[in-house]
Image (cartoon, rainbow, N blue to C red; front, side):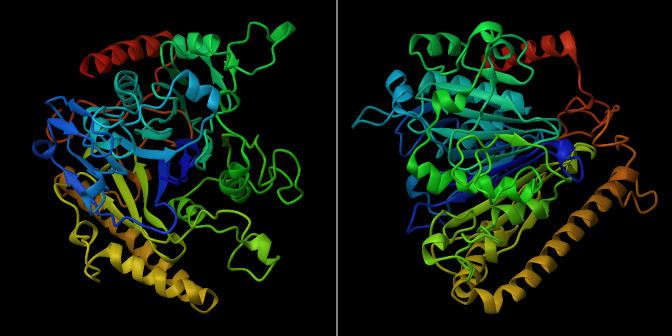
Length: 516
């Protein structure tokens, strides 16, 4: 899918929650109606066959409940888009990314050929991975094992998040992959292009603190001469390389369709990081060396994420709605906010709240410049009807179709209606935040036996860590689905460092690979 992804590390977000956000966009000239579902363990298939790839796989027998945003019309498969499971782990899949002939010759994509099945792809990944993982890292490892065994028919970028970390995985050819942990105080911009620009093989092959990869990646690079890093003298033994140069692309299409989106997102979130309008290397719309991640100039909110993923080059000559610039400039680049958005999911894991109401999935449908977000707490047995009842027939009973109609009516009259649209967005987002706050307070009253009104702010919560952007203290999350008692943390609250963390990672990795 021609999507756009924005990832925000927990120390870069306003409330200390890691944020994973992606627009799912259809191909030009079409759109796919979407709905929200809650998949209970008894509803998860035990044998799965992909529609497009035609590949069948047996799935583990112990799935977790999870949310997803599948196609409302299942003629091309599920396309689960994004969701959060009962262990408060989030997944967004996928950002379609690019490659180059050298990689595709070395490890061809696994495409369906008549009766011979293809690999798995965006249609399948949420269904195959999200119900079976209990951390973001486990998501990387399970998907990596599936890629190695079954392959994929397309290039993909996939995000996983838990209360601590965001991991970003990029596929390399048909079976290989790399993944990096997002720096906690950075944001990441991903516009349909292989993005990781620095990778430490030694870490990936060793403790895996910040890098993970296919076990044979070093040999794969060497055999096919894919590493383009110039090494001499003091850097001769360096194990770091640039995956964007090795595995990615720098085509004219990238410079019109992909890099301008990264440029605008970074221009918006780091406005003083460079002279964004001077056309200088590293800060121009066609720059191939825009960094994969940056520190923002202030902490970022849900509203910031929505605004960036709704943007259309406002304040520049490239804005299609602006009288500035020439007609050619206004049509030069593919905007982020377009008329063929299917859905936006912002996945928020609030690590300082008890597990039963830790996670929120913010959902918008249709063309994002004109539509709004609705929050949904994910520890539920079914999705609200207005989010879940999308059908083939247009109806104002469906939030999807209502959003699609608002956008279709507003777009031709942008300047006349945009003040009303912005007022609508502000009011509905305020109502959404108020609803989440009320739900948190009700959950706190229930949890603490109705004593008082319960904590109104997260900073007042007994489980609150002292500072979401500082050192972490211990937290005691509650139970998820009764699988663990209240005295047993679902996710580790503190960050374990050094050898202890590496040993824990290796034990967890072995467990995940064994289940896969």
